[in-house]
Every structure is written in structure tokens, then in C-alpha cells.
Image (cartoon, rainbow, N blue to C red; front, side, top):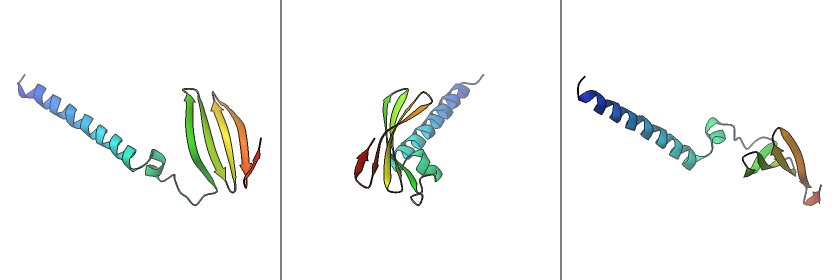
Length: 92
């Protein structure tokens, strides 16, 4: 076993970790994964406006459809509409 083998292993490992770090930095800097994959088209009728995580199992999602916005609670396979706003009117 040469002394060069462990050095090459360490350098190759650092190179791969560096590439993973650059990919993560690039995705964080230049947009989310949906935009990177082309799923963030603005021409559709439905758009996810904002997502907030309440805890590891629950999150709030604000969805816009045509001229209405819906606030959804997603938790453990259950979905619940919290609020619906349509053309400036608030409804439940």
C-alpha cells in the first residue's frame, strides 16, 4: 500500500463534498428546486404563494387559484381549508 492512496482518497472525498456544497449553494442562491426543474411556470391558473412549517408534521400553504386565495392546513395525510378569500372578500 502506497502512501499516496490515503492522500488521493482524502482529496477525492473533499472534492465530492465541495461539489455537493456548491450545488446546495447554487440551488439556495438561484431559486428553489421547483424553479430549477421548470415546474415554477407563471402561466398557470394555480400557484403556491407561500408555505410555513408549523412543526415537522403540520404546515400552512397559501394557494392562489384564478382570483381566489385559499389557506390550507396540511397535517399527517389530512387537508383542511382554513380560509378562502375571493376578490377582497373574506370567507371561511
